[in-house]
Image 1 (cartoon, chains in turn purple, green):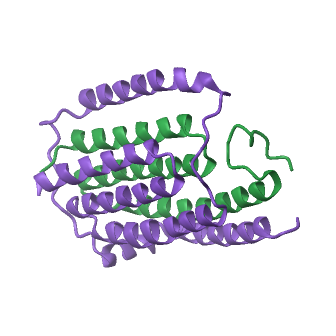
Image 2: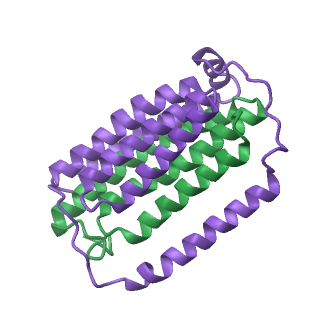
Length: 163
Length: 100
């Protein structure tokens, strides 16, 4: 089980690099689907069965289909390198490496590899999640339903031919 | 059992890769996908903390993040389509203002 975590974590990282490195948006989208599926397996190994299934159905299914649909609709071809905004290209990577080093140092300081014992596994099935969702988190749940409604209306208005 | 620090390290690596793509890429759809990558990196950290604290609240947060990501993708892709109809390009250097 521990080995599986490292295999799928490495797969997710490699696919993420592929998302950034591919020049064609469709290839990036397919790599992103691979990232999402690898992360779903990682969630499964960490005891989050419900979130793993939601990840595959909603994220890798619905959201990524939307992305691929738009890519094909807009006929997004290979991107052309442009000469503008060179600063991001030269200044970005060193700053990002600095960010990564900083985060890893903070993690090492705060959570030593041997020093954090895991709590006993809790039941994380749909029943337990549902109970929590409709007791402690009922207000955020209702707010998300309004958010979804607004998003649907916004998408319809924006995608119309005339404003 | 996998140490919590390793889960968080994978999360940090994924987040930085997503941020790198956000800076380097020029296609607006690819930039949008890099945002999704960063959201997923944060989700992984939530799941790791949820496992180590023995509480389900982290998983609920991931659930809400996925819902918000779905809404964001719908509205964001609609904006991209409206912009593409107006400017006929997907290069972010040419899309530096949202005014039509």
